[in-house]
Image 1: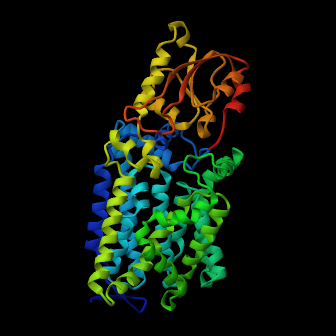
Image 2: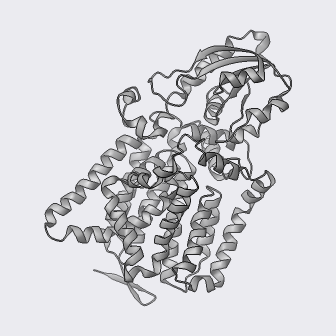
Length: 500
């Protein structure tokens, strides 16, 4: 095998061609399916939020909303272009996963196997299909892991690239701070400790902090709403919140049940193998963060960004296992594991099942997000019918009021020419309340008991349905016409706004 030499150490070749094929195949598959179903509620929220440029939002840093709004405007609402950056981020993650295997001095076969394991995984398909902060958060954690490995391998290497990637990542998703903190603590606890004596190591922290500063200032000046939101999510207010005891069992599903031995082998290798002792901090990060997120009510996928490095470390042991004993059978089992994972991940996490057939499948029960991409144009049409059923004299003083950001985002996306849209949910709450001239609200997403406390006249006008008969968060919700507010809108707004 040809080898290159850097810092006096022989290096195996990178399987560039194979990695490119795997990454390109991943991107083509996801991009090719981008237009099926429809917007996710989060995507609708991002598009709307990006129309209110800021250094931060109640529920996230600014980069993804600004990107979503720009792509939606430039490409006239194309789902392909909206979701292409996520598919490309996933493809880059696939390549970096293979590059990490190379940093462990594993050959082209292990690099390709690691990259393929991640490419077919549930988490790669799920976050690569939709535009979300997690799509880029997984890439950021993977890049940080790769850069950390390279810096630990070569003490003379600069730490500044880690600071730049971390700082940029913190403008995408605040979870990056947990990874950075775990690395710093891990270097003190399990070593190696030479980085903490390096000036550029702490300078990298300064770079990250500098890049994060605009969002930090925004959060501080607005009362740290993301901390309050985190508490609400931990208490189960999000559609993807899970009980604390589900956290560890859920980890068996994030990659694939049949590929669990690969990443477990990687975790063990990073912790115990003498030749990888310099990288034990990454095993420490996984264990420490799993404990932190489980105990604090974090969502099970919060730790997803560490699976590429675990797969990279576990690829070579898995291939060595496949060459021992009944090697033909073992190689067949590995191939079957990859094929099974690809098939299951594609069916469950990509929009391949016709929308009308979803109720007859377990897809919605397993993949909550799939249901949240169904029915938004019909939702907007129902709300429009209720609005247009009002007397013309009332329409000028009517607004839409929704219980969640997806509903509000759908109305802004599909019927922006009608009444102004307000919601008490997350960032939308900061753009309210309605003006004092508003006397009527077409409302969805709030219980009748609350509406009776806010309005003197409440009547049910419609029920939300979707043509695919998918049981998502909107199906079956009542639409209300509410009039005669019992107090001024500024007085009602603290009761209407909520986090989750």
